[in-house]
Length: 190
Image 1 (cartoon, rainbow, N blue to C red):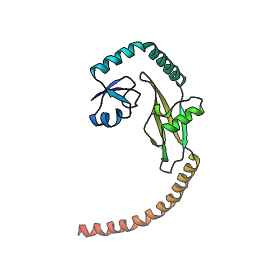
Image 2 (image 1 turned 90 degrees about the horizontal axis):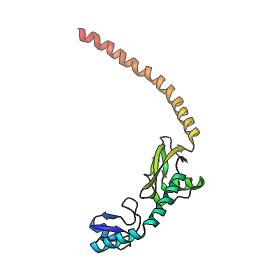
Image 3 (image 1 turned 90 degrees about the vertical axis):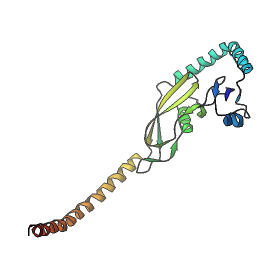
Image 4 (image 1 turned 120 degrees about the vertical axis):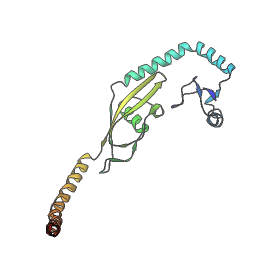
C-alpha cells in the first residue's frame, strides 16, 4: 500500500514522502490517526503542486535544521549510571536521558527525534539526531559506572579472598592424584 505521510515518522519516513507499508499498518494505524493518506494519482498531483509552492519554506526549514546540526557537531556525552559488578546497568540509558544530558549542555533537542538502542552495558555508543530528512547528526555517548571506585575495590577484595583458598586446596588435591599415578605405574609394568 502506497501512502503519503502527513508528518515525520521516525523509522518510516518524513512529511510528504511517498512510502510503501503493509496494508494493515496503513488502514488500521496511519490513516485513522491522520498520519498519512492514500497515494492516489490525484493526491500525488496535489502533493507535487504543494511542494512547488512550499519550496522556499522547505529550504528555510532545512537551513534551520543544518544550523541546529552544526551546533551539535563535536558534542560528546558521558552518562554516569549505576552498574552491577558484572558491568550490567541497573535499567538502561535511552533517548530521554540523552536529550536530558544535551539540555544540560544548553542544546534543546526533543527526545522523539533521537534514535538509538537502549544501552544496557558500560561502553561507547552512538545516538543519531534526526533534525531533517537530510540532516542527521551522530553523537558519541559513553556510559560509565557511577560507582566505579566501589566496583574496582569489590573486585580486588574478591580476588584477594579467592586466591588464598585456591592455593591451599590445589596441593591437597594434587597429592592423592600423584600417589594413585605412582601406584598405577608399577601395576601396569607387571
